[in-house]
Image (cartoon, rainbow, N blue to C red; front, side, top):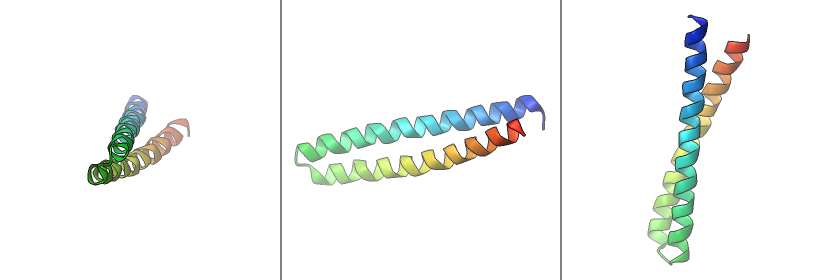
Length: 73
């Protein structure tokens, strides 16, 4: 694999991880707002979405780290 391809793959993985972190943060904020309004069902739904995005962010972060390490090896 070409060096430039490895760099692009690492960059893409970092970008994807960041996107999921942002989605998780937005879902956490929405969950908090719904909870404050007493809408616990909607709060739970947003909390579950936040959790899903957090898991995806972790997976992409791990992938990005592995690709970055490979790039520097």
